[in-house]
Image (cartoon, rainbow over all chains, first blue to last red; front, side, top):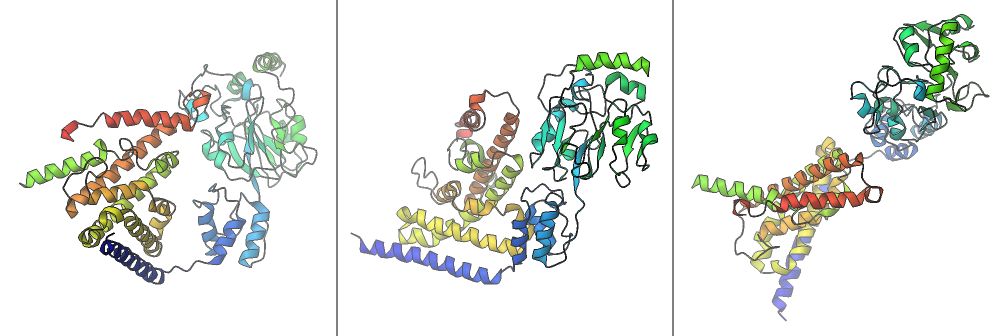
Length: 305
Length: 208
């Protein structure tokens, strides 16, 4: 037994330990950073999905910005009113109302719209969009490969039997992740609308009405019937496409009834109690007719108009 | 003479980074290799943090080794606790310093720094830097400070390079038609094995 070696080992290790602890003690004093306890509290109130809708990289960044009063307490669109109230409580300010927004799909084509070619690659909208602009003849419509549904951090989007993303308005928080993910999101295919917005126009095409009708039986035909029937002057055909002004819309639903291709749909979280609380559960959903049948019907109907 | 030194340093760097790649030919530090390689973004962050911490840690342990452990003759059996102590304290210190001085860098590296503290790749590199060839053979040679620095940066760059290539492969695998039974981790292991074959194939080159 070499006692000398044991002593040396103990001395060496204690010396290192002492140096390290002295250094850390000094550092913790010298580099002490004051952390506002409200940051932690606000962070725990936020949803924690790090969706980025508020413009901050993470919920932690948002919590810091809220505490530093760089962004308003209502910044978290994902959390909505409940989170805003809680944050207001932590920050000690009066709670205020949040204008909730939700994602709205402006396409009703799905399986019924005609395809430019048969695609058999990666089942992803971004992939297909890069192959000659996509397999859909319509340059504005939904590809239906569900990138938005996979991207949604709140699993609010499901693909239905029409191959269209259906937004569950109860779950949708308006974080805009789907809009960013959708290759046609910038073109307005998925767009944010007030959660109470009672109607949605399921078309995004700005092509000539005739060309549009040729490739999709569900499109807006720019007939202006909705514009004429609307008592609140809230819907207008602008650039050959019906656009709803949600500021004026009262949610009476007359445009939905009058639209010949059933392109205008009931929507909205709270506006119409009878409407199923889903985006896109409008007239056609349940017995949705597959492409071939719809195509025949539309050719029959077309000359009659 | 100068050219000779430069050539040796370049060989040392390539040998550390590619031929003896710490992840793919030595299989040290595999937990972050599989843990953070799921996404490109995190693996780039991890690679940056590893280069930073490994260089710092090896420099510190080299100093402690040459100033204290080796002269006392206790290094051979005491290096693991001593190095862990030094590395852990150092990473803590750096974390505190960054938080105060460069908050943006702290935010960027925040979660990786503590992860690396007890990483075996860092410890292995620190050990190797004071006792070259420790894991392979006993050669009576020790690095000078500059050689140690080149070696450590080489290892760290090799780590980052392997991690980032692997992350890129895994991102591609996400959308590849992999048989259901192999989806996820199993396929990652198979890929790592194939990738490793490529690195092992380098051994023997340049007489390394």
